[in-house]
Image (cartoon, rainbow, N blue to C red; front, side, top):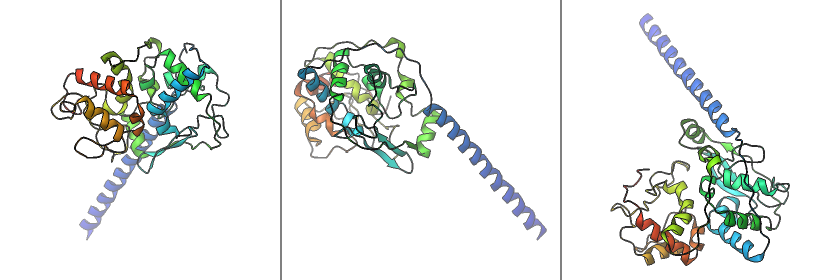
Length: 302
């Protein structure tokens, strides 16, 4: 009996120690993730001319519709749910209109540039969820057109939903698998180039910058670290034998992006933004031309 009591006491100590270690680890993750979430960044904003003509505003609307802005901020740009689950937390895109509940009503042009190109808010904090590493390459002309359009959007009265970080998000932030765009961008050395639209590899590379968030810097796809655990792997966009680009024709590629159905009839997972299907023929054909020039890389070898 005494031996049993001793074993129970040792077991209780062990369990207590384990619980203590878990509590310490959880506390460390909480502190570290909060630090990264609230990190501030000092950036010098290069002025961008904001046009007002109808052609530029229409160009800006096209960019907003085809580069993912409305996937996070809603079709009316009044804010929308991006992710909401126990693992990742409550993550909503902000209200980008001048309606009640929005923070951009008092924004100056430089605030728009800082947010879109640098991923930093007027308070110098990095913007969470904002994939500015994909937008930092936008030419001054396209960025100016996008801002011009955003400033014309009708006001939507929708309260801001505060971001709540889930445990998986906090761990990903702590270990560096998830990073704020402001942390990744080389703010002092941004040199966005003007690229003439055309069915060229150069223009395809310019458009493809918006694909890197999910498909990786070398476009080989694989696990999407920024999403919930149940998200599927991103497709391999290089012409490797384990992907589809080696087999698809230009027509196959364009049709797949437009219809969200592959040539074999299978549907592309909804994680792939349907908004990309609104790109024009020049953009989609340029993307195909660029992807076909990439070095073949095995899936997920980012």
